[in-house]
Image (tube, rainbow over all chains, first blue to last red; front, side, top):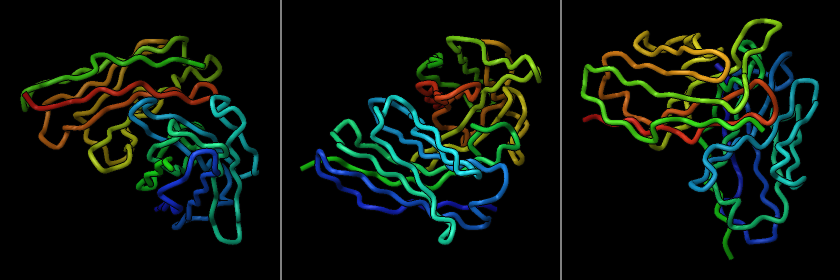
Length: 122
Length: 113
């Protein structure tokens, strides 16, 4: 069973960069057909898909982030990461890393981390 | 972007009764080449991540009780919970994965009457 765990600072200052890492266990991050997503949940915007990196290391982002997001993968550590630049209070949210095997179609989110609250505040 | 709109925003149902949640997409999520609706339903309980209940609009994820069912096609979808149990209290979300960016409904809070 694939399991995911987010890690990173819980407090980020405005205008700085939010950095989160997701560690995948129970399977290889390079497994064919898999998609590795970041999703956030805030009271103001609800659930918002941020982007994904797939098993071929193709990356797609939600344009609503205005090119502030960068997703990368470290296959040697079985991890993938999110960086979000120039953060504001509107980026305060619970951030989830989410795995999708593609079996039921890419974008059907089967495996979720527990989520980590990131607060943007000075 | 495809806008997903759920109704109602909240719902109170007696134990053992039926709960019905609706979801409407701003454009069709039916993929003609495979005749599948790219629509999922999730359940989120307090302090937990969302849990996948149903994909392709009507296929239950493994382990999901059969009192949960999904229906609909094109732009109009329904999640039905027959014989509501206490553990079904949660927020329910629909989500389209027909195209990028994937988008979610605003959620429906289900409570016991």
